[in-house]
Image 1 (cartoon, one colour):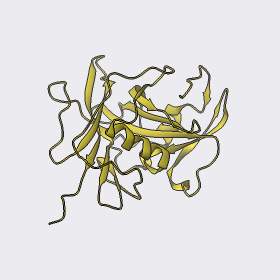
Image 2 (cartoon, rainbow, N blue to C red):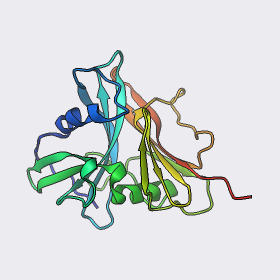
Image 3 (cartoon, rainbow, N blue to C red):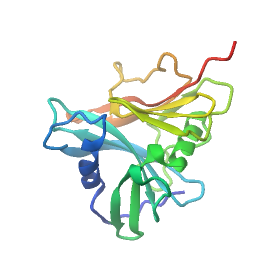
Image 4 (cartoon, helix red, strand yellow):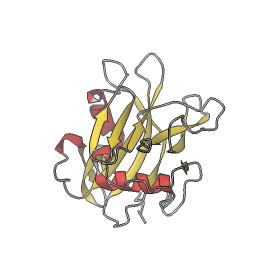
Length: 221
């Protein structure tokens, strides 16, 4: 169980993301850089209790219209070997000391727990409360086979990040979030599983939408 500490981060998460987002192919904001506010998200627990896992939603007001981005992040007490390209930055935590913050799509702990969440073996936790399930996060899995826990390839596009498992299963993280038209996220055509969550819109209303999709290859003939 992750413990949420009421303390400081220097630099803050928003400051780290403000510097990092413009380097991403799915950033659509203004050339002067993003203007970010926190909009929502949720956490997952690392079964080993070593890695912080957060799916953070931020709203950027720098473009022609507000854009909600999903930033899966992991927080580690030491560098993750081989993940220098995925480092968002380092920050000083008022209780835990220096933390290395990574794009969680490149962190095997976040990927494995995302698969467990889709399959129903993990419970989404409230973003800012200890030991409190997030009831706004929903998940579904229509397949009969277990969801792979290891995804080895990452491909960033202008809208999402795709992770591929050796059997051809794809985990698609939607980077640019869109509210469900009727307020209720529905399964995506062709997807065998998904995670949906909620975030705040600039007008103060609450939106819900898909965040992660599971795409399973068709059976061999």
